[in-house]
Picture: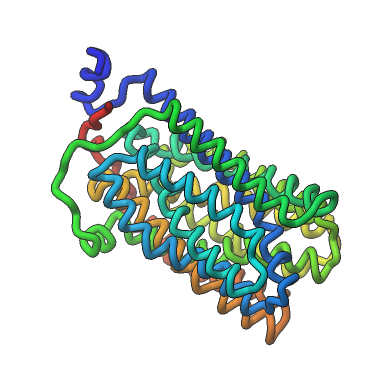
Length: 409
């Protein structure tokens, strides 16, 4: 460790040069992995339908990923707080690449569900660990800017994924989408192995899981992610279904819709970071949720490509503002619970929603139709608005002191 690095560690801040390198590589990891996820997002529901999956089984397949990811998130989050982020991230990327390639071997909904379950275990070691690492190096007062940039890179990657997926499905084969994801994550693992510095917080007394999960600073993030997962699951699982199988849009058209929506998410996150750092975060969350509810209702009413495009743009604005704000709140909470624990608990709450919602909405789709899924999404997300407004009036967010100084190797 150089003199500059030692000084940075003693002051609780990472050396600026290493911080820039780490932030760039973490954003690259977010971009690359979400690019791959975006590639298979439109493909997986259609791939499952080729095997005879009903709406219920499509929900089960997606929920199996969320189930395993949710179970292992707190485990890997706590491990990263004590053992370092880098090694877990590398193992996760390697597993992510392997299980992505195995999708092409699935010949039944049962095997597809199993592979999806294993994929979720690897996923628990990738994005949440990268979020925790970014939270470690974010200084007090720049949580919104740092996390907004990170999530912006992630959604920028995801925005190009569906567009690439549509082209692959139209001109090659649906299995090409899964092989592309495997290749992308393998390359990301090699880049991180070569260049990403190791990083861990100084030893601290471990915070028990239940204590961290019930921490006052994490109550709103947990509540938000449970609500957000309703809208996100609908967007992720059922937008390709309603546009591809009901409206009979081409794979490229479906990819364009998701591309535009996620580009908007990325842009809003990048632009809103400084606003989030200076504003009442609970009020911003309420605005974001209200926009998400309105857009979900609009998707349910849409009939033409232009109408879907407009609704998706509005949805992207709501997602972008909400995610930047909640990421800042989780980072602030992580200074007391540990960034790995905070990121793991927040992601676990989202995972619970993503585990339950697709199955429930799969039944809704089978019994009441696909449009009812989007109307139900709008109603459920709108419930959160008065809660967030009440919290915003009762207490502002106070910036916490910096986390314990990191130890860099």
